[in-house]
Length: 122
Image (cartoon, rainbow, N blue to C red; front, side):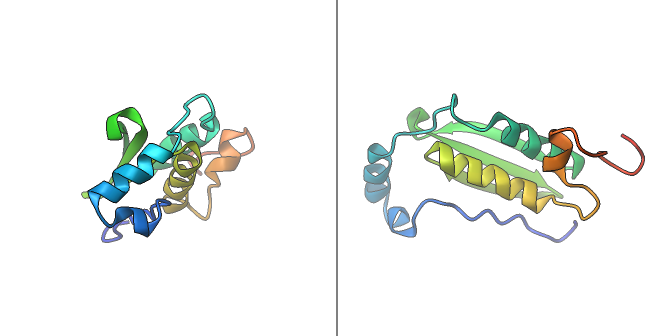
């Protein structure tokens, strides 16, 4: 994976990124991330895919706790994106899984109990 820079595609509309005032206004209208509604299996799958791919995933609070910032480290590169809602967080976690996707391993299937993690049986 060397030389392949992670590229998250933020689900936050481009218009909301124009200025900090517009972003603040956009965020105050949003309801934020409801951790009770976040897909727990999606979080675990993203962590598994990232760790198996030799990367690291970091979660941090953003916008005073309204949203979540996800930072992904992989092969010396760093990608950071922001999720303002539960749906946006689920989309970003799916992007992490897709980034580390391997033709021989379907991490989503592994997490529901239907496959081996690697050919070596780890």
